[in-house]
Structure formats: structure tokens, C-alpha cells
Figure 1 (cartoon, rainbow, N blue to C red):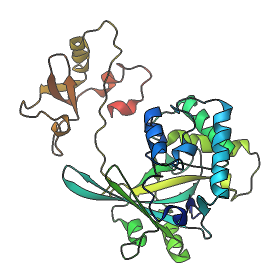
Figure 2 (figure 1 turned 135 degrees about the vertical axis):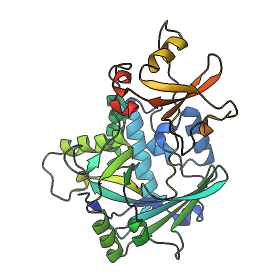
Figure 3 (figure 1 turned 120 degrees about the vertical axis):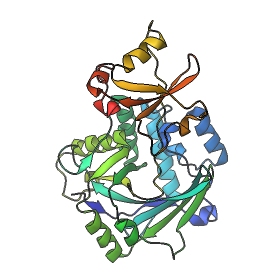
Figure 4 (figure 1 turned 180 degrees about the vertical axis):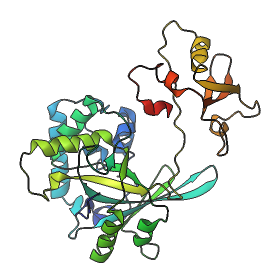
Length: 337
């Protein structure tokens, strides 16, 4: 049973930024490169990347000094009032308003802290493998700053959208608003103890699936275990998480496109022939020129395939998944599911 708690968040001080936070927010740290970081810091030297992304790329641990500097900067921001800590524990409602394919959506999430548990021992489940380098980077940053700076992204099933109904903020002004890359981000700090208790009750029997942030979750586990014996409600027993209902109309999940390479001397036609041992393929409709339109919602096929050699597109339907699982040794079977 997920143990969801409110917490006293550390956030940007509205009085120092005039209520405009566009220049201090950033995309998730692990999608940024040096050029992206520099562009964000050019907008404001108080942009969160100055603390949350001390080493680029964050795929391995950097030198100790970069994490020491990040911690010093975080302390400076707290001391000079750039960041303030909320006086009351809250659950933070978060809405992202965006447009895709000409249609407007609002993705509704909430931020809270969730008790950490090892995968496979309770109701928190992963969906991907993790690697040591990124976890080492996050561990060093967490140890230096004594803070969790980036939330895990978790999904839960809620066909009735009951949790969102409890956290209805439609008639209240947001605590903070910021726009980036055309996406309007709004956040409300909900401190009503009855609402918080209702959310905890609603989430009590809903499994949580980690959509993004496996390395951060693993880091939080490692950090907790390194502390030795802890009180039951010690902060290190919890992880910072953003939660979204799978059935939320604004939770639009698009296909992930992959460029597959590294086949050595094998010709693309040989690779394609090997795939046909485990799937039935057919040439795609020649009138479709956009890969995003290759598989409409009612398509009987499982995936689309683009072959650069010959500039051709195909659709495929799995027939013998067990054969496909032998084509990429060590690859998770989820790839073919």
C-alpha cells in the first residue's frame, strides 16, 4: 500500500521574482546537455539547473567539487531568500497545459513524498533496468545537498479520476505559474488536512508504477540504507514523487521511436528478415508519410518499422515473441511485449 505524505516544500520566493518564474524552471535534468544548461543559466543564474545539474551529462559521477559547489549554491539561495520553505506540510497539485496535434490537454499530477520500498516487496513497481553511473551522480548530489531535487514520476490506475476529484483546484488561484516551451505549468499548495487525508485514503490500495526516475528511486534506496537504523518516519525513508492517473485525459503517452544500429556487417535486409521470423510484416500505406500516423488507434498491428535503406515503412504484428527475444541477448523481454 503506497504511503503518501504531505511535506514542506522548498520553492522559489515570489517576492524576489515578482511572481514570474519562467526563467528559473527547467526541463528534467537528464534530457539536457551543456548547451541547454548554458542557455537556461543565461536566462537566470538562479535557474534550478545550477543546482540540479552540476555535471553534464549526468550519466556518470563527476568530480566531488561540482557537487560541493551545488550544495553551496543551494545554501546560498536559502540564506538570501531565493528559496523559501513552506510553513505547512502540503500536497502540491500540478497541472501542465499543452497542445498536441492541434488539441489542448491538461495533465493533472500531484507532488508528495512516498515511503520507499524495495521493488518487488510491495506496491511500487519499475519498468526499466538501471545503471550504476547515473545513480552514482544522483547519490553524490543527494549526499552533498541533503535534498531530493527532482521528483520521481509515478503512474497509478484511477478509472474514475477519484484522486483528481479530491484535488479539484478549479476555483482557486495557483500558488505559482510558469511557462516554458509553450507549456503552461501551474502549481497549488494544498494544506487542508482533510483533503490530504482523503488523498492518502484514495491512494492506499493503488499500485504505483515508476514511469520515469528509476535511477533517482534507486539512489533514494541506497541513501536510506546507508543511514543505518532510522526512526519510522525519518525523511530518508521517503522519496519525492509526482503522481498521475493513467486514465487522466491529459496523460497523453506517445510512441517512443528508436534508431536501431550496431549490427556489424549484417545488411539491413538481413536484420529485417530475422524480424520476420517472429512477426508478420506488410508494407505501410504509401499515402502515410508521417511515422506518427503509421499506427492509428484502431490498427491491428503492434509496431511500425522504417527502413532507411530504400526509404520504406512497414507495420508489423507479433506472431512468435519467443523468437524475437533471442535477437537481442540481455535485452528486457518487455521490449517484445
